[in-house]
Image (cartoon, rainbow over all chains, first blue to last red; front, side):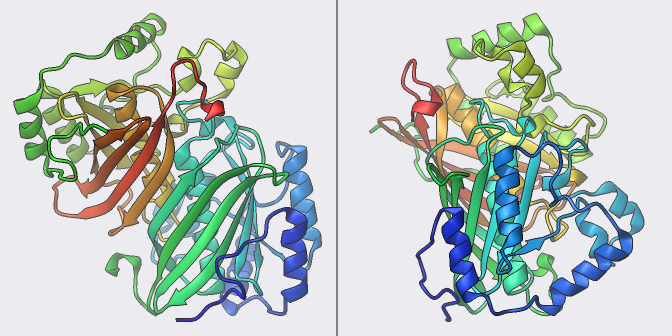
Length: 232
Length: 232
């Protein structure tokens, strides 16, 4: 068992504090796996959805610009077709499948988000603006949509910090509903690693740090070298 | 505190057993709230998505027909625009918003599902066929998509058995990935009610009962009369 975070169980909130913490500690470079993904993407030039578009509201844009300026946080690109980099899937299958969080054709109506990764802290932050097509029965953002962006943020962070992994448990507290069209920050951190088990914690807060929407823990299991997720 | 299930913590699996259990116990009629929803829907005649369409695979169709034949299970209609029955939302907002699970225009690519409710057992079953636009990074159904259909099933069951409620906690174990295009059954049950707290349990199994994909518990808080979800 090893603790990857210098202060397991503690998380700092407010973007200025998130950035300050990262700047003081960052001394890692991107792992080889991530560099491969980038080469692939450049060669095929699919659209990177983790860049600003006109549907982003001022809070989403401001948070993006603040994190993008800080060198301790690396922006993670995001594509709609998760199968592009999987050679085992045919071109026919490629055309038919889409990543759940990038499956709508029109900007601004679904998941608008971008993620930033801090290598030193094994920490991933997602700026998220839920569009009007993500509604729940109560008129706010659907609870499953919040689970989705938490799973996406935590899972992406683990892929970048440790390697491919599968979700084993998600435990989410819903404390305050998230209005459609608002901007929230998902702040996820690896807390400890025990063999193939990766324990993480996560919070979802409003763009101005004033409202705690969700607290969550998540357990992931890393894949062995050459193992497919179907063998788990 | 009252126990609504005769055997809290126990659930039967396999559709034949689900149906048998329901047929022996059903002796309730639909509550007034549900009848109001039906009148509204008939007046506006929106499309009911919980009816078979040509993209349903043979397993989905078979399970639908078996539950539809059994009088102890009542089919629950499903619409894309959750705001239709909320008089506080303007027609303009109505046009812009959609229910998260019904937000794709093309049949078969997203959430294909229908729910059935058993009043006697306070039990809700969802037949679910995840389409190719619900993919996760590993190529199977996205973990957030599974959380979404669990939240939708459990939440719908509580609305029909007790009344409007908000998700307070979702705790989901992911045991086996769900292939895109397959058919699974989400089986959800109210376990106990303690004041405004409603405790539920849920399992997700393959159409043939052979594979346990997910186990979950969920806690919901019912809304007080006249209370909006924003006041929780």
